[in-house]
Each structure stands twice: as C-alpha cells, then as structure tokens.
Image 1: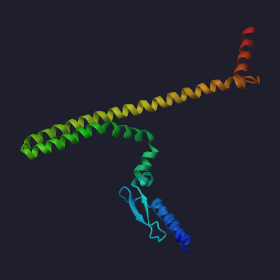
Image 2: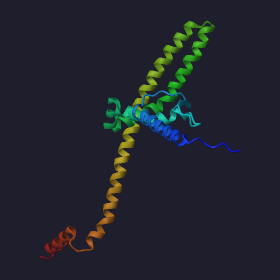
Image 3: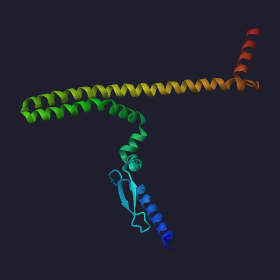
Image 4: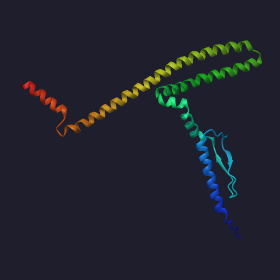
Length: 192
C-alpha cells in the first residue's frame, strides 16, 4: 500500500520557498557573508528538504558589488586609465612576486638547516631585486596602458571617420550638399 502525503506538505513547501527567498534576499543585501565552499545552510523545514547548498563562488558577485560601492572602487570606476594600469601591473607582477615568495620559502628552509646569514643576504638582495623589477614593471604597465588607450582612440577615430565617409554619398544624392555648392561656386570664379 502506497503511503499518502499528509495535507500539510504543500504548506511546508510554501514555507520552505518563503525561507529560501528570504535567504537569497539576505545574501544579496549582505555581501559580507562568509561561507566555505559548499557549506550547507539549514532552512528548518520538515518537508523532506532541510538544507540548501550555496557555494562561495555564488557570492563573488556580491563581493564585487560591495567593492564597487567602496571609495576605492568608486575612484577606480571614475579613472579607467588608472584601473587598466593597475590591472596590467598586477597581472605582470604576479610572476616575479611568486618567484620572490618561492625564494623566501626556500631560503627559510635553508635557515632551519643552519644558514641564517645567507638567508638574510639572499632575502635582502632578492628584496632589492624585486623592488627594481616592480619599478620597471610599473613603468612597463604605464607604457602598455598608454599604448592600449592611444590605440583604442586611434582605431575608434578611424572607424568613425570611415563610417562617416560611407554615409557621405547618401547625403549627396539629394543635391543640396554644401561641398557640391562650394565646388560649383569655385568653378564659377575660375570661369569669370
């Protein structure tokens, strides 16, 4: 004999749906919720479904929104060249910083073996080298960002000029083009 569902099942499902919508609204309004990956949040329902899995990757959008509302995010939003420069700098400097951190870890391991003076010397030289490399990369990222911005402006100007030339013959077909009138006036002057 099949077991029949109790009549309160639809009521429980409605309650579960209400709590889920409240949870989603809470997560969207408060972007500082810290969840570990695939952490389960209990909704307290007796309808057979008592948990919902929300991964931390779903909260990235909320983090981006909260960053863009911060003063730093608003400043970077108003200064796209600086944002592009910062992005290029971070992307280009990731490898040298990674090598430097690897160097620090390896020399720290060597220090545990007994080479303390060598560690200080290598970290100092590595730190100065990293400083020089990062200064150079900062200059390179400025140059790359400037090149990208100038290229964008030149290409967009050329495209706008090209499309304006394509539209020019359409305006000439009705006969009242100022350039045609000027050329007729100049021809009249030469004939006199």
